Image (cartoon, rainbow, N blue to C red; front, side, top):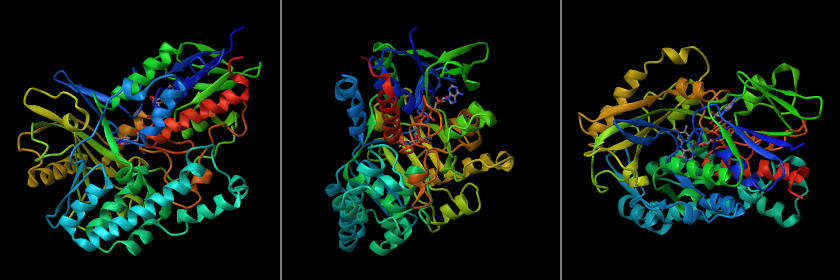
Length: 496
Ligand SMILES: Cc1cc2nc3c(=O)[nH]c(=O)nc-3n(C[C@H](O)[C@H](O)[C@H](O)COP(=O)(O)OP(=O)(O)OC[C@H]3O[C@@H](n4cnc5c(N)ncnc54)[C@H](O)[C@@H]3O)c2cc1C
């Protein structure tokens, strides 16, 4: 009898697992997705015939996607076009300073010298060296292989252990940045990288400073046609290698079957599976899909990463000079106060930092005849309960629009055509509490607590996605999906 592998969820992790497995195993491969298309948080919406992205807007570490594509016998750069915006980001500071940042650290350093002065440039250069060293020490042990454990780290050779001292995990990100950077504006720029995995820089280990190197040193890109093109391409490649996709098919439960496999409960059907990769949030797997009857050995983190309020504005078209691909508007008060609001008071910031992505420039995606789609994001606390629904999101939106108008980034009659608050995100992604990146990394030990890609106490069950190892963000979720697939193939599923 043909065996069957089921992937639950067609987000980045599920798509990467499907691409990595299709054609590599004798088993049938079936992807079950609750939504009507693939992509998960890489979502899109449509207004007056124009389609726009509603999720991620920058791709870092494209090497991870390239490696996945080549493992599936495909050339990433022949399938997709990466888009570089120039300048890449423009930062708007409260004192009126505008700083352009480029896709090469040297060009960014020159811009910093011009705008913030020589000392800021020297400190930036020094920080890049420091952040790069962390990345080079941490990524092989915490990202590019199986989930680390205290035992696996202890077993590393002397050289690797010596290199691990570089990761600066005993200080917080805030402490490390304050020790190295004196310019308040440059501090804000570096602190913001904590939000790239939804964490609090007052608690997150300084190790996360490596994200600054990942974006500013290694670069970040858009994807021609929008990030949704990446998801669509991954789905197509998996299908071409034999994966079957069933959309509008939420999985309601997983039970273990007598023949050492699983029964997957759907709304009006039940299907058998011999192995399962779960791309849904780990909390949804443990609390809803397995429930109290089954323990798969996965612990759910109590601290979710931050959430966000998002909108898309139909904005009169502007040149890249007046409105670059990516813009970031800092609030008037100290930036660190944003994390106090989000993590201590569990609310949306009183003065939000606003991120803006002009999708025509960043992703070469088509807009309306005279208008382009501007994706807007302001971080907020993840959903904790009913209070979130009573929050004045309308007032919050007005505050964001006013700030953008004051900086002449949008015009008075530019119109919001799509919006979503944390509760909307939580409802769309069960178990996520509206968090963007799975669990927060608010302690030095969180990398050891993240669920591994192979469920510890249930043979045949694997986890892929932002709430599993190695964590959230598009490239890490791709890596997660690849590692879940690799673990499954290692467990005897490889084609003979
Ligand atoms: C607004 C926003 C902006 C972001 N910006 C960036 C960015 O610029 N760069 C970046 O790298 N990252 C960014 N991220 C994070 C990034 O999008 C995510 O980390 C990543 O896409 C999550 O992938 P995942 O594998 O965890 O799957 P998810 O995207 O969480 O998808 C899981 C899938 O499983 C499905 N599913 C869940 N339960 C079931 C069930 N019971 N049955 C069937 N299907 C089910 C869901 O419908 C969903 O399709 C952003 C996220 C958001 C929301």
